[in-house]
Image (cartoon, rainbow, N blue to C red):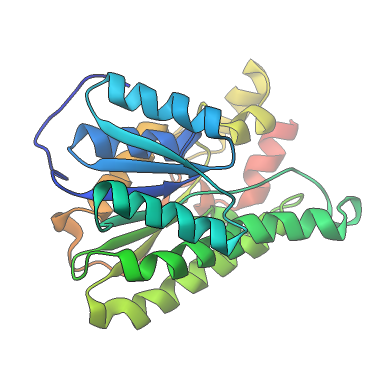
Length: 267
């Protein structure tokens, strides 16, 4: 994490981020910390979380790791309570914990399907439900990390598409129900993002990467920094009248449909 403190856009705010130990969610946490927020990272592996939090602290930010499984409501509740005790009420909630493995429906067990739905959809519900009483209202912001598979069906992603479609609808419902409390709820739907496990599986070699990029109108993969920048915007005062939005960040890839990308990667 670069030591860059700009305008402290989030000075004095507290962010709780699930799946915060790595990938897109960690980059969001780093960006929030760079702008002055105190960040709590939740995930299942305490050692991984502590390494991530230490990296933020080494760059001058404030962070702590709180171990827990989003599928377990009691563990989520305990993690949020610990965060509030350490930092105070929560201003920003990012539901980013997710599971995935590419598999056709007939090559997937019922338990495998359930595991992804439980992490993505049930985990988002658990996090939002447990956090509500600890949110600093009005002005609190909730962001769920979804995927374009929620509205763009793709082979080998039935479990993810079903789970993320649920996340999108849940988030829109919460945007309606929580608006009177001053809580905004939005969704970020990333497309192909470089330096993530998804891209490593989708395009494992240089030729596969080239073909995959050719199937994206902007001609490249997105970056974790671009998703973090979108998250920063959504939880800032600049987005104070935005709620219930599904913010797609995919370089236009979903405009062509999943078949274009899959066909390009397959050659």
